[in-house]
Image (cartoon, rainbow, N blue to C red; front, top):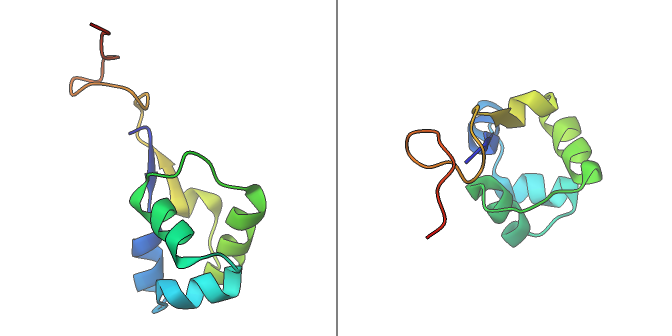
Length: 82
């Protein structure tokens, strides 16, 4: 994937539900679900800022780079087009 999302782990550690975080951050549950699943194509800095504020964490606690390109194949090499 490239970027891994660790919101579920932070929510558990903070004893907070995703619904509570949505209310505090002022985003929809659907949008938070897309972010949590790693399917988001982008996220606003303001949203990340509010998430970090309410979870009392750093951006690096939420988003981590796994060393691969998003389109990497199973061996870590970019997939070839047919």
